[in-house]
Image (cartoon, rainbow, N blue to C red):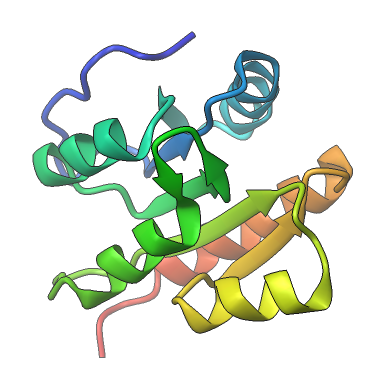
Length: 140
């Protein structure tokens, strides 16, 4: 697992994905999928640790569980969106809560994508591809 503290990153590094997931099996699955695409990954199991990681390092892609032991992942999305960041952050909520109302709440809080935990690996990889394209766009 990749729970180590994030290191300083520079422009030559490939984008690094922050995974915020408290279930070890789901976390391991996400790490394997993300690394298979050539992206680096840092995983943390809580909203508190995610906040600390986000203060320490810029992550252009964040995948967050909706139901964390110490908070709601969409609240974390809202916090990220309220920050004045100089670069794009692509937020993906991955949750067992997958009703239309849940998805609408996540998107309204600033998530770019909201996926069910029942999503296939191919769906998740497609969303990661979209995220990579968007965060690599030049600033306006």
